[in-house]
Length: 294
Image (cartoon, rainbow, N blue to C red; front, side, top):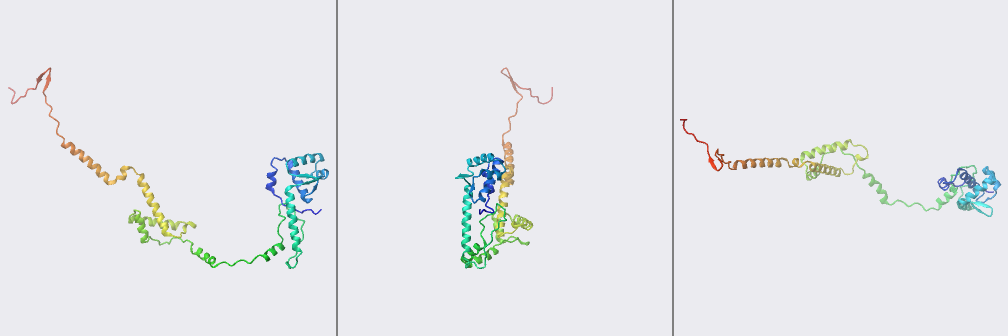
């Protein structure tokens, strides 16, 4: 019996495929898979032999076998137990071995490389059995076309990338006339521009990391000024109406008060109230005395 010393094992597939199976059935399935690979995919349906490998009774094994067959985990045909994935992987392994034998049959192609001896000491079930030998790798390297040289454009690309790296802001940075003109177009005075320039320089000198390097400091300045102008407009819009009017509205208020006072002064005086009065249709008036009392 030319059994495999190891085989491909797919832990995730095994765990996903055995969801809902109890510990006893799952353990029996794992051992049966090992036996199938040991027998090159053709495990005799010998209940006594398999029960001995599992350490259980023949009756128990038959119950487990029927459950595995019902779940589609094993196939039983003409007294042989097999597994669909095992059949595929074993056929793949046989093809690989035939290819190895064919390579070894042509020593003129590979003179300095000896065929590796089979190693039956590896017990890692997760190891890929289809690892290519050094002989196959040598054949592929010998038959592969030589690599194409890089075009001149590719060589210069590396230099261009190196030249495109950013730089930190100079410690003596000041706005250029172009920078002043842009800030002025955003409605800023000369004093405001100088103040923002100091803030701009101090901020970027103190900044560390990759963000402190810029490719275009003029563009960075323009973005800074835009944000300052936007914030200024937002604050102005958020102020109450009586604060937004300023001196003009204050003078207008004074004008309204002065006009009101002038209107009161121009209005005719109220008529003089007389002391005369009327009682039951007869007019009465107080006596007017002149001179001295006689």
